Image (cartoon, rainbow, N blue to C red; front, side):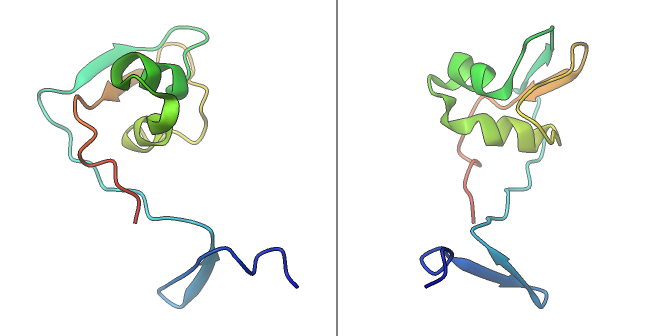
Length: 89
């Protein structure tokens, strides 16, 4: 039995992926909050501060094209006011 047998498989453009999801495409809005990251800022802590949970760290990372939870000091971060578009496919 494979350890991946219970994980969903996604096929897109003839490419099979295991346990992944398509991130939403976010269009920036005038109501978005713009932050300038300081040393130690992380997506999960920003999610906690603005959404009341760390669950949407991936949405903040996706909106800002980040590849890590850690954010380099001086980076401008966009935080959407609403999580309505935070839906994984």
